Amino acid sequence: MSWILGRNHPQAPAQETTGESNVGTAGQATGDPGLTKAEKKAMEAYRFDSSALERAAEAAKTLERSKHAREALDLSKMQESTRQQEYMAKVKEYEAHIEQAKSEQKRVDHEERRKTLIEETKQQQQRAQYQDQLARRRYEDQLSQQQRVQEENLKKQEESVARQEAMRRQTIEHEIEMKEKNRLKLLEHEMRTKAKVDRENRDINLEQIRLKAQEHRVTVLEGIKTAGTVIGAGFEAMLTDWDKVLTAAGGLSLVALGVYSAKGGTGVVSRYIEARIGKPNLIGETSRFALTDALKNPLQYLKRLKSKPADALQGVVLNPALEERLRDIAIATKNTRQNRGLYRNILMHGPPGTGKTMFAKKLAQHSGMDYAIMTGGDVAPMAKEGVTAIHKVFDWANTSRRGLLLFVDEADAFLRKRSSEQISEDLRAALNAFLYRTSEQNPKFMLVLASNTPEQFDYAINDRLDEMVEFNLPGLEERERLLRLYFDKFVLEPAAQGAKRFKLEQFDYGAACSKMAKLCEGMSGREISKLGVSWQAAVYASENGVLTEKMVMDRCLAAVEQHKQKVAWLSEQEKGDYKSITGGGKDSQ
Image 1 (tube, rainbow, N blue to C red):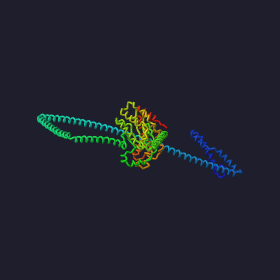
Image 2: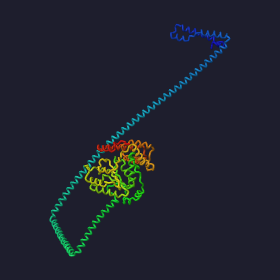
Image 3: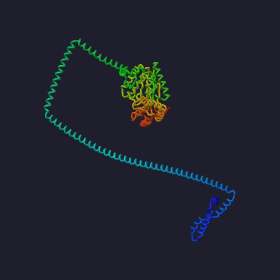
Image 4: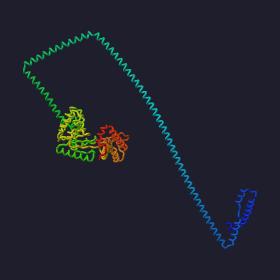
């Protein structure tokens, strides 16, 4: 702009002149031979070309003389303003770039700081873990050292106790030995003294013995003479008077007749009372009330009289097909009693704890009959009395006015084959008595046998059976139903009734029972019922009296392990019998 504004700035030519002078000075300085090459090169940087200024001045003069000088000036101002605006835009853009760079730098710094903090945290955690490991190792070392010290102390105490016990034993043995020696010496001294006294008093003792013998002989002879005189006088008087003889004979006859009649009558009355009122020795449990039971428990007797027949399968969980068959048997038995027909004999066989005894009781209650339970193993100890006991049982059963369901548990204990070498003569006689009393159908009692090994029955026993029912181990569905039944009975009902120290944690009871049903494969109904009792025991043993799902599952797993242990204890023959009875212990649906 200096050449355009040359008119307004008179100093411009002077500046040009000054520039020329400067150029000349620079040229002189460059041409100075006394300068080094580096100095010459530095001086060339200050060299100024004045030709451009001369051309600019000439153009300014030309422009001043032109008529378009003002338009050119305005145009140059506009160009200058545009350049300034572009410059300002570039400046602002540069400033924006600078701010962005600063923000990016801050972000990078923040990220680096965050990484640094993370790394420091990680190092602190590692340091803390290392210190914790060191502390644990020190604690374990201390524990091991304390344990070693305790073991050494215990060993020393045991050795000390052993030494003291040995010393005490030696002392006792020595005391016993000394006492025995003293006793022997004392006994020897006493015997010597007594022998000496006896030798000195021998004549006196012999004289005393002779006097006592003479007095005893005189006394006996006088007694015999007196008795003979009295008896002789009596017989002489009785023989001379025949009325006295007849009276004495009749009195003795009447006394003998009274004694024998009283003895026979007492036996008949006692047997009648025993048959009507008493309970035979072989019967262990019965629902039939005797007169003595009614006097002892009148309320229970009245309650029993008012009780209504219950469902035969109430509380009994079995396979659906088996339940249907047992329900038919219950209905037939009830109708038989109502119509006073002949009862059918039933055999229930299968593994123990599958509900045979329970169903027998329910069957008697459903049909309105009394039930009585006897065990086959009770017959053998009775030996020869077993036959009499069997007859007493059936005589007692025939006196029932309501009908009696006689349940014989473990019947194979005395009803086994008569050709077997294991059966004794007494058992064979008891078996014959049993066969005699069950030879025909009876309207007074119903015979129900239960056995785990029915193949050992005598053929005559099998001939007297009208129905054979097999009770298998519960399958998956039956186990789940049993678990739900006993969970409700032993857990939910006590918890709902507000039993003391008996609370229940909230969890999915149905899912827990389904899970346990899969774990309890091979277990009988009795074992599952004991599992229910173990849940109650877990609550009573807990600190807060709350039954949790973990406690329930732990008890279930413990019961499963106990069942496996029981099976492992069986001998090879018993295992074969167990598998044949249970069908291998697999689920049967």
